[in-house]
Length: 96
Image 1: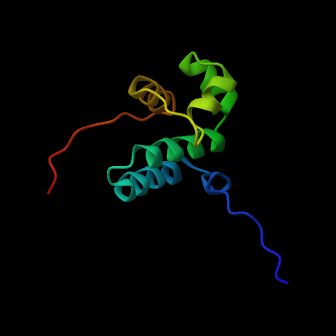
Image 2: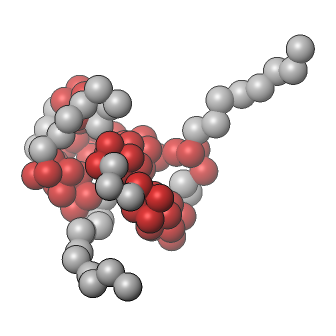
């Protein structure tokens, strides 16, 4: 039997550039799946400091975990608050 370990993308997001490239790739891959974007933000939040992020967004740590979980359904306002607290913003560009 082969032993494996669970892959955790958060463990590999060490720099701001890593995080930006990860989020860009996730946005491209997500298509029209908003849950994919929420999952990507959750991964970045875990890579950073969830407690500090909770303070920066004004949410409780538990509320943040719940909103960004696979069962969560955060509002767009929460998603943009999390992105802003992580140092990012959403922009609109013409599709090519």
